[in-house]
Amino acid sequence: METKVVMDTIWVLIAAMLVFFMNLGFAMVESGFARAKNAVNILSKNFIVFAVSSLGFLFLGFGLMFGDGNSIFGTNGLFFLGGADNSPATGAAYQGVYSALSWAGVPLMAKFFFQLVFAGTAATIVSGAVAERIKYKSFIVFSFFLTMLIYPVVGHWIWGGGWLYQNGMFDFAGSTVVHSVGGWAALAGVLLLGPRFGKYTANGKIVPIPGHNLSLATLGTLVLWFGWFGFNPGSTMAANPEAISHIVVTTNTAAAAAVLSTTLASWLLFGKPDLGMTLNGGLAGLVAITAACAFVSVGSSLLIGLIAGVLVVVSVVAFDRLKIDDPVGALSVHLVNGIFGTLAVGLFAQDGLTGVATGNGLLFGGGTGLLVAQLMGVVSVGAFVFSAALLVWAALKMTMGIRVSLREEIEGLDRGEHGNEAYPDFLTRKPAYSFNVLSGVAVPQQASQALNKGGVRL
Figure 1 (cartoon, rainbow, N blue to C red):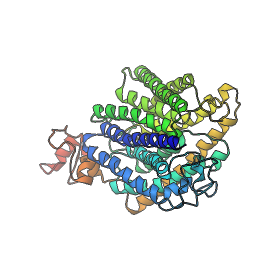
Figure 2 (tube, one colour; figure 1 turned 90 degrees about the vertical axis):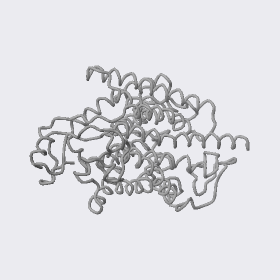
Figure 3 (cartoon, rainbow, N blue to C red; figure 1 turned 45 degrees about the horizontal axis):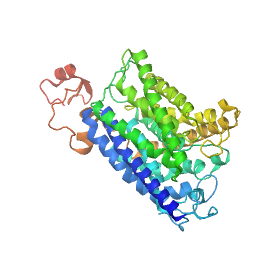
Figure 4 (cartoon, one colour; figure 1 turned 120 degrees about the vertical axis):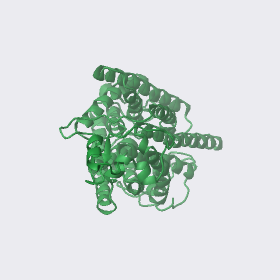
């Protein structure tokens, strides 16, 4: 038993470190998809968000999520992991402060760190969707509330033995708990912020705003793909060879299938294979398989990935037509495919595939019971997270404000929010808009020159 505890602990910590490494991937993806003038801001947000998440989750979040209490939230073990260490588990499951995690026989601190990196991921998802116009301090405060209160409550419902778990919902590694939570929180912020200046014309035309560095975005996507091999199989929280091996293969298969279906779909729709779409397609496949990776066959994971790849293309186009401005496609990747991945459990699950009694999904003769439980989870989590996040965003908007000034947005958040630039020695393109010192509004370059009549032009 002692050897098993050691091996399980090593595996859980290595997997957690891989998930932590995904912070680099998110930073590269988001900065690559943004403009050069906002690179420092996005890198800084992605760096500080894990520090904020660490303290919020340590202070209160972990206890709310996994502490014993009621079916809505934990009431024991709050505030800096209070309560006795119930690990390593030996023999019968320990019914103590954190009995929701008693099935994992690793030390409490290993459990905490593994769950912490997932909380940080949920907060990071928000960063990309609200990029290029969010106030730095408002994002920090929102991230603190998200990881300390909103994320843990949903986590308790599903992973902490709460009411959705009791009603038969399954989410193995977080299509809903992590990705949809981040997506719903991001959507609330995007709707209150509004689109970036110049994204949509007065007559409704969509103006593409390309990212400044697809090399960084590609690097980041590969880092995320790599990190997902800790994210999904690490959720076994035990060095179970058969389960880990199965999950690695279903995870990779879904990602690969999504890359190909996204590339083909964007090629057919736009006439060219769009690299940005391809990158987001791989991430969409990874998000979609996250809930089901331990419950479906390799063949089913292939189908899930193919569907996710097409879904992300359709979703990106749909959000743009609705004038919901998401610079990096986070809503399409994490929210839309988080929902799809959760429902995929109800469609493709095969009972006991890796030793978990899920029951069979609809397509394997199990009827609609599992699918209904999954749908209940999607709807309830969406309603709660969107409402709670909207409330926090609205409170921030009324107090400290959530959007930078128009002048700062046009100049770039790097100068306005941080006082420096990512590429200070590079000659950047002249902006399409200038800030007129007489009228105080942004106007096209030519008009600004006429209005300024030799005055200062930014």
